[in-house]
Amino acid sequence: MLHTRFSFIRSLKLATSMVVILLCSMVAGQASQAIGQYFVDSFKVMGAKSSGAETIIWSEHNDIVVISRLKIEGLDEDENNITIAKVIIHSPRKSSDGGFTAVQLDLERLLVVNTEVKLRIASVASFDVNYPGPGSLEVTRGTEQFTGQYSKVNFQNVGLDLEELAAGITIDGGSIVNRNFHEGLPHNTRLEISNLHLPIQLFENNPAGLMLKTLGYEALNIDIESQSNFKLQDRIFSVDAVSVDIKNFGRFIVGIKIGGISFSDLMSGDDRKMQTLLGTATLVNAGITFEDSSITNRLIKYFANQNGISTQSYRTKIENQTHTGLSALRNPEFQNRATVEIATFLNNPESIGFTIQPDAPIAPFAIAGMAFSAPGQLIDLLKLRIFANK
Image 1 (cartoon, one colour):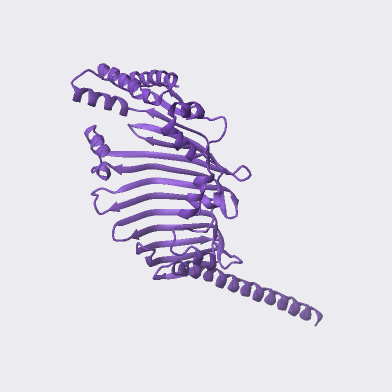
Image 2 (image 1 turned 120 degrees about the horizontal axis):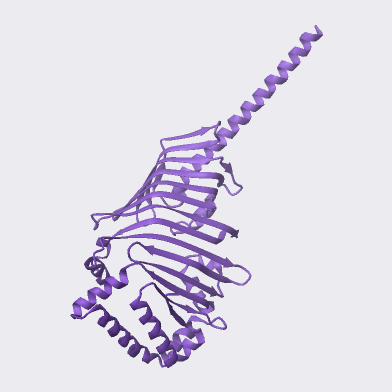
């Protein structure tokens, strides 16, 4: 009898535990599905006329919410219609503001269509996602801002079709990495874009586009990398390096450091705040380098033929014109130095660039004023240097 009583008690405890686990699982499933439904409905909070999905399913085994055939209509002033074949939210957890966090959020086969363009993206994967609650979405409604956070986004196979283009713009893939968040904004961002394909048709009404076509370019294929940082205490925003590598053309490398910046104002998208920044911003330093991979000699050959002279004669002509033109800056030392560097590059096109490194940060308005009144003094103040093949 005693053995039977203990067996019954053990069975009762086991059954109770199973019921608790089942109830917890049901609650977790309901909460996760509610997060999936919130994601679908959030687009209406952001201004869409309608949003809905075919199914919202929670997988307990994988702790994911799968949203199938999400359809959003009339989003933003462009009246965008969006379809996403599948949304997968990994390990979703509700946030105190009514939004949610997720280890990863995947979008598969995304299509955005309006009257002018069609955007296709095969896949988007966001990591360490903090998706905002309805209050934050309401604040940014009707703007291009989004208050969510993520540490990294990968995207693959992007296509943009424009009405006026027979061939569309494409991107093989890319990523955005955010670090060092403060008040919801990343102060360290890295961007990579692989093989951005721009058909020359895109520029055919532009003199530069016509020139590229004449030089034999049918498209520009570009790799882009950039790294930006903001130092909160020093109020300095820097683009440490932007690399734009155009195949069979050349590579541009740009860097700039600006002081007196409020990062939240810079990222606000508010025109008034941006105008205010012009009054507080200062140039700390800057630099641009161009590494040639064929465009310079193509241009020299083309213009030499147009002028009916040899390529060497045309190089000499440019050198003389450069020296004469730079005399307007009223800085003979810089004039002579720059002419030599430009001639060096034209005779052996490897790289050419300039740096600006003033002793103390200088305001944009001061630069603009001196550019007209005292350009030679401005060159010395900025410590402007031109270099070739370095």
